[in-house]
Length: 156
Image 1 (cartoon, rainbow, N blue to C red):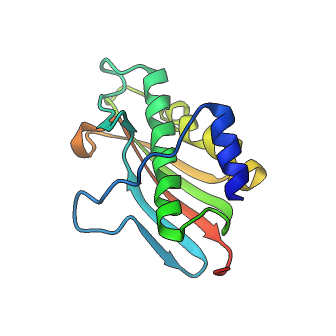
Image 2: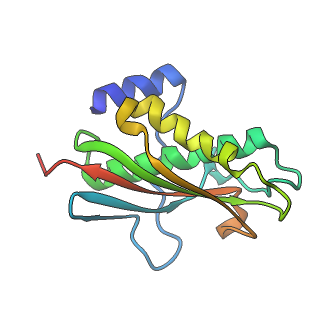
Image 3: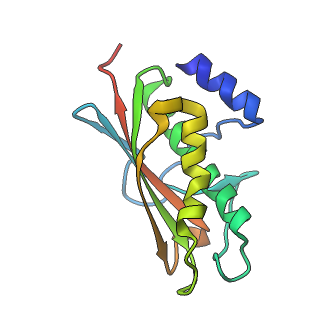
């Protein structure tokens, strides 16, 4: 799976970022019962958090790019935890939190930035359940935050 994911990333012109260290009292990934529970990940571009508020100066396209960056960080955290991506069998669920104004209603379109990437990388196994919600603020002023539940095979 790792080679296939690496090839897909290369074809998309993307690379996995360095897995970010936690900014508070939590661990990035917990493995339990065949599932990885990945803590909320922020979007990074060129080493900086992608900030902004959808509906107040941050475009839908910028929000989608931030969601995609979060999804890349989710995969980077999984790779750091497992050592490779070979054990991933399914992306089960994504939670997408969008820093937005009260009148912004395109949260699902923003979340597609993360969802579409999972399908491009994992094919049918990347299709997942999802929640996309608007929030008043996110850590470090991030535009988007994404958490995940990912099914993995038993240790190889």
